[in-house]
Image (cartoon, rainbow, N blue to C red; front, side, top):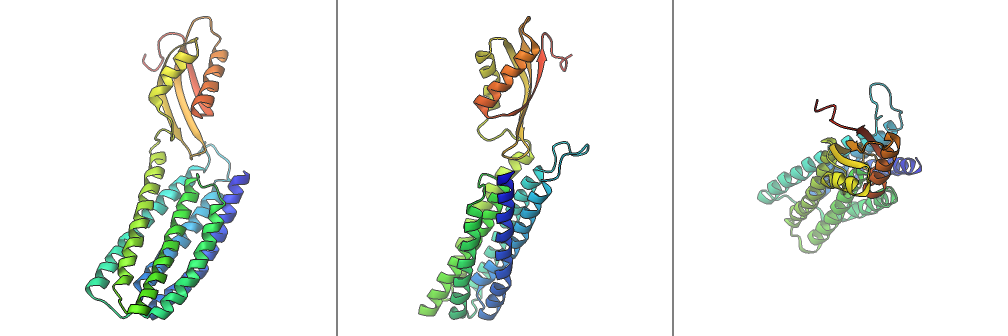
Length: 288
């Protein structure tokens, strides 16, 4: 619960920082004509919404399970992470589209305002990154929030570099070119986030768990277990890993002792602390 509260608190303050600076960056981008600033402001807008949604997901997951949602609301965190990943994909595509348009039809960019606003944005994003760096980075909801902030951080660096080049050389194509590089980095992070969150939403096996090994391991390590089948392993969140299975045990072995031994092995060997084990003596009831 302490880690959960820490994640929630840090995401809340990161959202406040991001939302506070987003309007200033949007105003500066409109005045200077910089796509790098406008792209970063647009990204910060989606980031503010995403961070707020991530914070709400942690708040909602506090609610206890009920008769309609027997696993509670923890999975909402994963759903938010998936939504954040998809939002990042659209942000990257928008940056690519605008950059192509700017390269074909260049416009005048004021380097001074770009450098000033991007410099302030860099410190704001560093602050947000520092806040999230202290959270549980294995949590997908935190990862989604952090990817958004890292994208903002890279956007500020790109805008700062673009403004400096324009001030020194007057070469405005650097602005959309660096925006494309930021978009590519955002797209890479988004793909990983969508993949991981989608795997959990599709009830995929937890990371590091090969369900093909479980049956052989249990029969080899527990003498009373003669066979294992109907294995289903999945995650509610990364932290809440589940498994159900059927185990055929030898005659004379107490069912309670066999179940306890199987659960202990699943916990110690595979990190599966929540297991539902159906013990069988002969034929499987489901097969009948």
